[in-house]
Length: 314
Ligand SMILES: NC(=O)c1ccc[n+]([C@@H]2O[C@H](COP(=O)([O-])OP(=O)(O)OC[C@H]3O[C@@H](n4cnc5c(N)ncnc54)[C@H](O)[C@@H]3O)[C@@H](O)[C@H]2O)c1
Image (cartoon, rainbow, N blue to C red):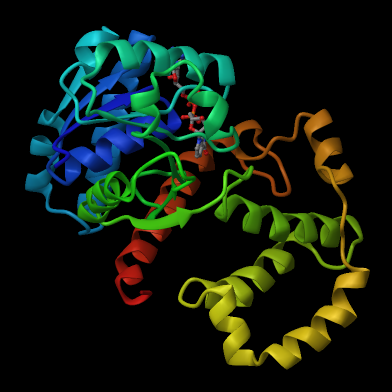
């Protein structure tokens, strides 16, 4: 049974992963090569837990014990040597991940299960430098940002691991209230990001063609398909609507929709102009610097409300 967790990389994803495991009672060691990142990570975890308490998702009394369960480490061996499960959230560079797993293989017990939070890298080459035995205990466990609020974790079941190892990790994620998605093929983007890119391609194309203003496009998604998607998946929606109707509408619409094979031109243009979104004060919308902390907080609060409601989604 998995009890002790190691998290390697304490940035955007790593801190949220450590936070979630700690909140649900696991002993966590969090490692980063950059000590400043570790200090920032624990402060961020504290703030995020405080917001969860403010929104009555957890009790205020749960905050300190969760923080106490996280040990910050600047020594990799110390961070992972006694762990049952180690997940990495270091930058998306194959060579970096390969070498990290090689090191982990040397430091950890043979039973330790390794996971990568990669968004886009294939598992097979990532396992290249670890022992044959370890390959049977290594997988992708792909969290969504923000990790402490998004329920999904996509888990690889690509044929390298026996079913009982998968089950052990699935049980771990169920114990921290995550919704696991079993992915059977080592394809880029797994399942959720592929779906998301499909939607995003059409949305960027609609705005590029001037079909509607940004506010209306987002409204169409939030109060149209996405409103239903939160509770009912696409395949369920298709069954409810009737597959015959989906066939007719598909034939009529798909031929006039965007089918480009790379990122949208308008998107690329905005990037060129330095309009990267909230982090630069402008993307598709404008953000006054003084409003940004409140906008970020509101985004988190809405997700917390969604998370509370999601108990009814399954
Ligand atoms: N950001 C997202 O929205 C998101 C979502 C899902 C998955 N991911 C994936 O998660 C992984 C991490 O992404 P992120 O956004 O958290 O990156 P990030 O840049 O915020 O954090 C990466 C951290 O890794 C540290 N690091 C670098 N080299 C290291 C090493 N050798 N050992 C330990 N720590 C090291 C850095 O100091 C940094 O703090 C990537 O594989 C990414 O594709 C990201």
